[in-house]
Length: 64
Image (cartoon, rainbow, N blue to C red; front, side):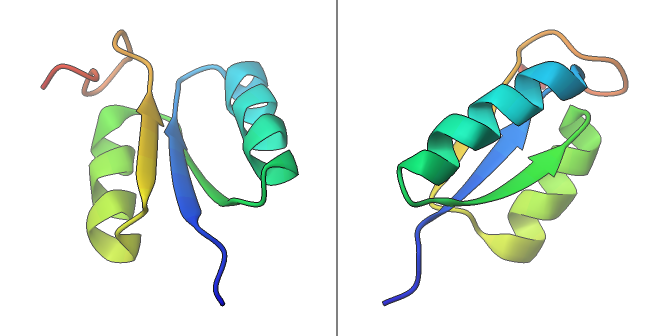
């Protein structure tokens, strides 16, 4: 059985790493993105089971 996939979108590398660490402990495979634009591209490409996003980011925010 394949692991569930999570996508973490945040402009803060530290925040991405903390979320990823916690999700990996729970058995998720984790993808990361630095902004909303990159996050949308990764989501379309990989179709994650869950997306965790910051709402305030450069390039494209989590509300767009």
